[in-house]
Each structure stands twice: as C-alpha cells, then as structure tokens.
Length: 438
Image 1 (tube, one colour):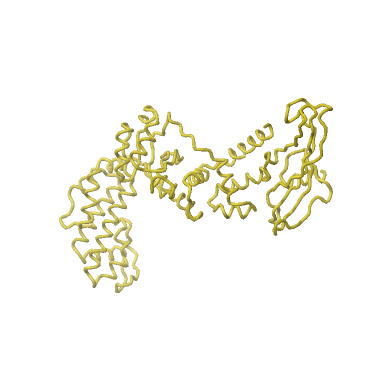
Image 2: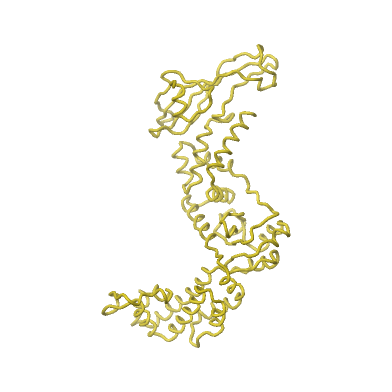
C-alpha cells in the first residue's frame, strides 16, 4: 500500500483525487497554537464546466491552483490538524469563467471538514457543554451552535396521528420563552418526545392541539398528568375519549408532604421530643410494611437497642394528632400500592377525628379529583418516563450553565434525546453528495 493511501486511512479521507507528496507532514505554530499541517493537492479532470455546463473539451484548460486550509479532526497527539489543500482550477473559454474543483471532504466555501462536523455533532448528542466541545475540537462556540442548528430542523409533528397513551408535564424554560414553564408531552409506551411547546397555559395549548385532526384526538385513550387544572380542562375539551389519570408519584408526594408538615408542627410544640422527631422523620414517611421489625440497632436519642418499628411506635405516642394522621397516611399508601380503589375511596371519605389540617387540605384536593385518582389504580401507566426526560433536561441546562434561546435549548434536548448514530451518518453522507453535486 502506497504512502498516499496510508495517510488517507489515518486521516479518514476517502476522496481518491487528493494526493500527498513526500515529507508532507509538519508541526508548526498557527496563531500561537501548535498544529499538525499536512500538504496535499486536489486534481482530476472534471466532466463539464461548473459555470456553463459545457462538456469537458480542449477549450477547458488548467488555470493554476487555489490554496486552502481545511481543518480536520485532531491528531493522535491531540494537536489541531490542518490540511493545506491546493485545489486545481480550470478556465473555460466557452464562457470565459474560471472554476475550482470540489471535494466531498469539505463543503464549498467552508474550511471545516465534514468528518470534523460529524465529530462535533456527535459530541453535541452527549451531555456536554458546548464551550467544552468547542475547546476539544479547536473551533469557536458559535461554530458548534451553527452545526447544531444545521442538523436540527424544526421538529415536524404529524397532525393526523397521536399515540393512544400520552404523558403531559412541564419544565423550567428559558428567559426568552413565552412562559416561565414550557410544556412537554411524550408517548407513554416508548418515551419518544412528540413535541415541546414554549408555554403551558391553557390558551397556548388549546391553539396548539386544535391543529391536530379530530380523528387523531379521538384516538387518544389515556393521558397521564399531574394535578394541574388547565391540563384537565384541555383534555375534556379536545380529547373527549381520553381517560384522565393522575400520576402516582404526585399523589404520594401530596400526602407525604402533608404528614411531614404535621410532624414539623408537632415537633415545635414538644421540645422534649424535638430531636427524636427531627432525626427520624424518614421512618414516619416510610411504608409501614417496609419498616424493619426484627433487627435491633442502636439509635441516637434512644437508650438500648430498638427496631425501626419500635422507634416509629414511640414517636406516635408523643401526640394523638400525629398518630391519627400517620394511620390515615399509611392506609392511603397501602391502598395505592395494592391498587385498591374501593379501599382508597372509603379511607378518604372516613378520615380520623383528630387528623391534621395539612392532611385535611390534601383530602379536599384528592376528593376534588377522585375519579382521576382512582383511574391511576386501574392502570400501570405513570409519568415516570416523562419525569426521567425532565431530569435529563435539567442536567443539560445545568451542564451548559443555562440557556438564553428557547429554540437552541429545544434543539439540544431533541438532539440528545433522539440521537441515532446510523441515521446521523447517513444524513451526513447525503449532505456531502448534495454539496458536491451542487
């Protein structure tokens, strides 16, 4: 195998019309940065004039070379790599115009190679800051921005179809967005993001979803949401066949926070048990069936060895309101975990006499949305899949130290979430062929 082919393999160059000379590799400084420079020549006989389209003949003659500096992927020793490519020029006597040969290695009027663009975009699909990506590939932050936008077109959403089960949620948006919270919805079965909308208000969402065909909206059988009233109003109006299902996590969170506030209130009025109530709050929120009642350990604030069940039993003797609230909380928790809607409804309608005000407020909220709460126990669907996406969005924002542009933030979310390396490589090759053909 010749030296020319060896260099091409090392650089990842597939163009057969690029030729390297002996001693073509040098190390030098460019603008204070150590670089690996490689000299090469691009030459071949074109099929026709690039200006007028006349087939190649004796009136199309060579017209010198155009020197260009093309940035490649960094070398093995982590240096910036520059290809000094001399492109053959031709002069057409038919149209009295000159043109330069092109190569699929780089787009016309561009100095950054396509393999480098692919490497930058590949890094953009990972949870990394764009400044860090730009630094690793020796390009500017705006260049990384531009490549992300070039590979992301405004997501095309089919308005004639929707999944049978949807998840609705929201996340903290950017400053330039219409609302403080942006809306996100996905397929509850696959976790695929369908779309992201700037604002979660009822009017905005109604204008968005009314665009979908009636058949598509009627095909939705279930929508999982949190206790956000505009979502319920929207579903009733635009998705008449969809069953509203409240998310299990938000229901458990509602009653557990109420019990925890009850503990804090009682803790402040019982100074003698202050440390015990403060230290072992997690045991009170734990499901009673998960408490250890067989193994004995030493617990601070208690003399002798005790089980977790003994600690909870002692804490419940401190205050009658705490005990009744705890029993009520555990009964609701048991009904939720065992998926017993009748038991949950009965417990909710028959609270203890000395229940705390915080839990009474939670009861009022649950009674208000009781049909949707009971629907949660009749299905296995939850908002867990979309909460995972939300967590990923928070990580993306935190790593980047925030985003100013909603469009760019949305592009990065969808690129990271829907990254497909095989599809990406095919798109890059297609763009390279189109640029050469143009």
